[in-house]
Length: 413
Image 1 (tube, rainbow, N blue to C red):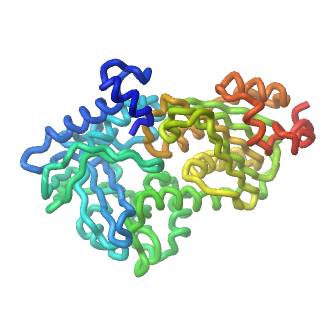
Image 2: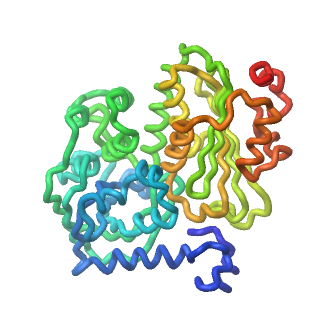
Image 3: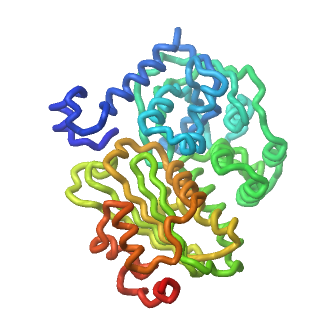
């Protein structure tokens, strides 16, 4: 839900635009859900799953598994409902992503987490990792009520209802390397790293782990999606850390920048042994800071051995993109990632946009090479609305505070 003061919404009622947004997010989401619900006749959903699946965590070890279908959509239009990489490349706006996710109707059933083969027998888990949309028909126990739930890690979930019968009428397209891994009696970590090195993207790995398609065959489990997302990011990041440990240190300080969905990312790479520092700056009236009277900061520091003072899904998503960049460049270095969240980020759509925004920033030419401390300060204050007299209390890695000024100037003067 948008974190706008309820008093303002009560005065506005969606048409005065007192919040400053071009359209009312509450009404936009409701209209999209009604649009999806109106395509359902006699509680039957017909369409092609993008493919898309979500596993809840409430009631664990008996959890809900949601199979998502956009009623009436097929082919490319269906696939685009679950396409975070393309959303980033096309710069799909926040309102558009919410509309796409609102149109996905969720047919859910409860399963025991220690019985993943039930999902396999029903072709739900296999369909979830197909390379192309899967023709599906779901008979629901009742018409789905218009509703949209948000989560800080996963993409929004649209209207849902229990499923009585699910029929998958097209054959899922599964790459041979994935099909082989499903029947490989190997540890989960081993399979994840093997598939990753063979070019399988993290989003497919997340769905495989969540659907119970990885691990020792007799010990497999269905994993709630939120847990699977962070587990994949952390597993791959640990592997990448070990890879870059013996690389030479980066010879330059480089600054990168990107902005998407009301989020600004400033990444500073510098010579070092692999520390990662993550600073989030949440403005008042953003999605999680309703009622705040000032910018709120959150900091995580992880040393080169992967020991951190805290953990966060957003940090995990950003870190994997940075480590991938270092591994491709065959260097190691220290990293500072500053994420500024603006009030225009009025609804959480999952941490995929953090992963992809950091990746996009690092794919572009740096906005500065070997800047001085004064130039770094100028860049931060010009690219963000943050002020250094506040931010320097949280950043220590690059010497913007008092602890490491001599360390950074060694490379920048």
